[in-house]
Image (tube, rainbow, N blue to C red; front, side, top):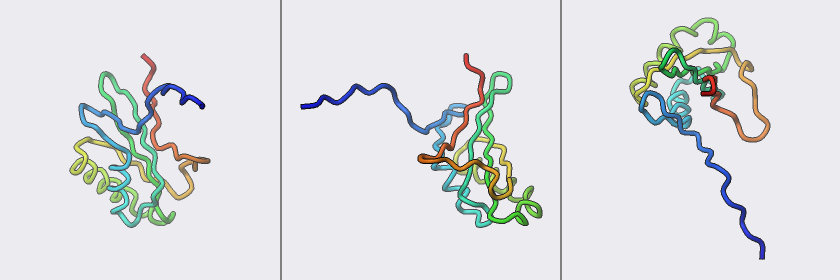
Length: 116
């Protein structure tokens, strides 16, 4: 009988931003409410000084929506994220096709903090 290998590590999608547990699925659910946004998004974490900052890049469904209403859409999404998740995030609205599509499991979180 074959033995099951030991668990090498844990890989989950939870982020801790300023003492708040944030799941990418929460952000996805909030962004899906806005009909002008596509379901393609990317969470970027950066460190400014001693604090972590969250940037959410999200595609619009049409190029026209990104050009005409990008600022309104991003402010609305920022407010929804703050109200429902409890963290401040900068939302950057980009045209369709801007965010790289993954082969296999989608990579939704990019950690750009320096290694300590």
